[in-house]
Image (cartoon, rainbow, N blue to C red):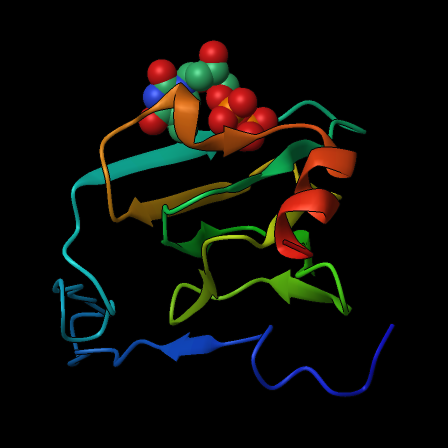
Length: 138
Ligand code: TYD
């Protein structure tokens, strides 16, 4: 793993609008989240030992927030790799386009919320690691 992770690991700090009743979080496109939010999905009920992701996107940008539980995310831009724990509803990670990502070690209670800049489009996926490396080098 490289120690120079400034471009690869971009945390999104999410302000907690708490009061004595508890916490509340608001996510607005082009403010906290650095793009228009076109799609929201969430991953939950992940079976023990399962890993997900294993792809990059040609254009899609995403912000992933673990709103309950935790999981580990590997980010790889073809030059450097970083592993981070997503374990806070107040902390998102930006998954830029052309970043290979994998999610591992999901806790059984993990709910991983993902905000995406585009609607679902299978043609935007790069699912072969060798294709990803070719693309980032051209
Ligand atoms: P996939 O992106 O492969 O999941 P992961 O990368 O987390 O392992 O998606 C799994 C399936 O769900 C795949 O058949 C595509 C479908 N899917 C949608 O239909 N819409 C979506 O927004 C997403 C993210 C996936």
